[in-house]
Amino acid sequence: MRTSLLRRALVGLTACAVAFFIILGVMAVLPRAVQDTLPPGVLGGAVVVLGGMAARRFTRRAR
Image (cartoon, rainbow, N blue to C red; front, top):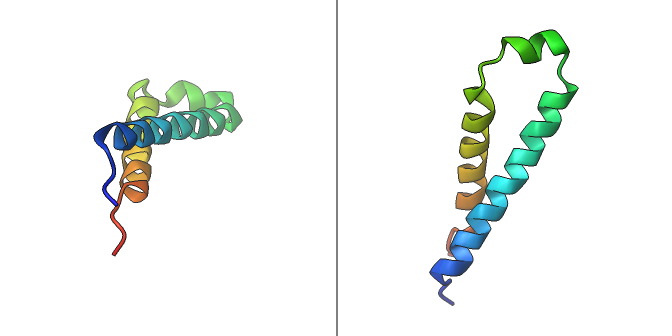
């Protein structure tokens, strides 16, 4: 069964959203001093990496 491009895009967007909320939760748990030392790009970079990894995992073909 072939997956459509729209389905793959939705899975990718969902994976990025889930990664965003996971990273946001981890950032909220960190002490305030650690939060202040992290550059603003760390959150965005972590979301992109985790979202891409999750999307890749869910969109792989069955063997």
